[in-house]
Length: 309
Image (spheres, helix red, strand yellow):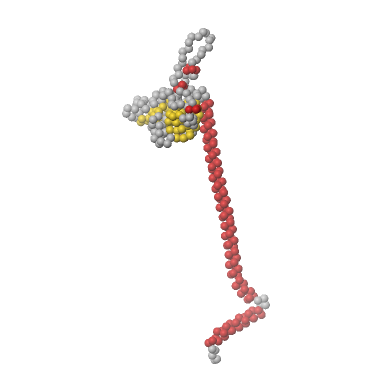
């Protein structure tokens, strides 16, 4: 056997492999003139590249479309959120206007129902800064003929009294202030007892001994004895009754919503607060008309009803 030098072995091996490939290719071409083997090799080599390219294009296109869609959806969501916020603000404004309209309608109805009593509608414009006192400010003052110690009410009941008057504003001490009070009585039993403030959202009935029966839920109205408020204006409702020594401890929930005051009435005259008595008429000839004094011109009962609207 002839020995082949080592440096020629690689070339000989390459030549043998190449000859075998050419032989197989020739046989394939002879048996199948269309060259199926070449197609198989070509397709086998190109298909993975095609699939990879198609997959890449599809996913890139899908990612881009999703990005565009998400960006549009995000913008639409932002627009919808802004629209919802605007609608909520609009609804709140409409509700506030409706509440103002209802409040003004109630004040107007109350004023018409008591047209014979001089009173002035006022708007609450502020509150006191001292936490120990309960004071509000109204937009009526001396140029509107407001004076100190005039009573302040709402259609629900007693609010307080004027303690300071300026040109365009006035200061009102709420009835619940610890330095405030009002002449009161129990509406059913007619037992009189001053009601004083406690500095809290409650009033207390003073100087009622344990022999007087007071029930929870009893209505408390003004008595007119303080010469600030006419009789029969609602003060509140008895919320708690406890025996004490020597007087009962009676807590009263105010009738007026003192924590939500917006509109009030100022009673412009103190005259109706005094007890009105009929003045005896002087003898007149038969058939002659009688003249009534200013005190007798009004009906004996108070000018303001305690009934709630």
